[in-house]
Length: 270
Image (tube, one colour):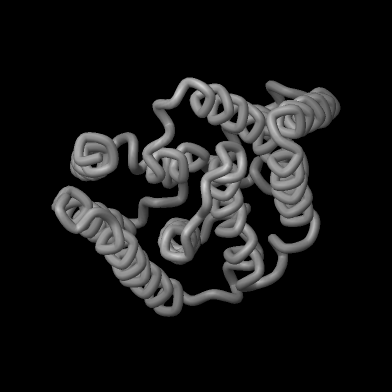
């Protein structure tokens, strides 16, 4: 969904030609990211089988063979890169960088403290960059800083939740790099990233139409969303951010409020 961020913020996503480009970018990144997730799950299958929750993943559970998963990864990678390149050559380059970055994560960076968090966050940022490249939208520094800070918030929160689980349950199959982190450190990173997200988004919002208060009002649900998410992390959840967001009513409500205010500010006031 981050692919939609730049054209949405630029107010061009409703244009017929833009809709097609965004759709193609969306599909291409779904395919390319699927390829890297398949590869990662093949490499993690033995470790996942020792984990109470991850052992139910299709490859770890034996529902999909490693060979079939690798073939599917190759096919989705090629098709995704082809679609991206056919849409715009520069989009194809961004998709290739994303594929190389995430593949190298599975092979190298996931084993290095700090680098693993940075690379995952970079993957989120590249998704947002892809949306701008696909639609020829110039990405402002404030926009990129806000996306980067938000990505670090989610990834650091994921590591914090994994540490919470590892410390409480001593589960087998926990990520080896967790030994290089502490709950206190990751909590600080989460808090700093949340603050940076608010500051960067606020700077972005106040650069928009001064006669439209919608962007400023959207700061409130964003801050509420970050606060609620941070509080939930303290309960030990957050290993799967998408599941947490989709199953918590307060997060869903804050998300909806932010989207409505942002869309009104972008389109109705224009």
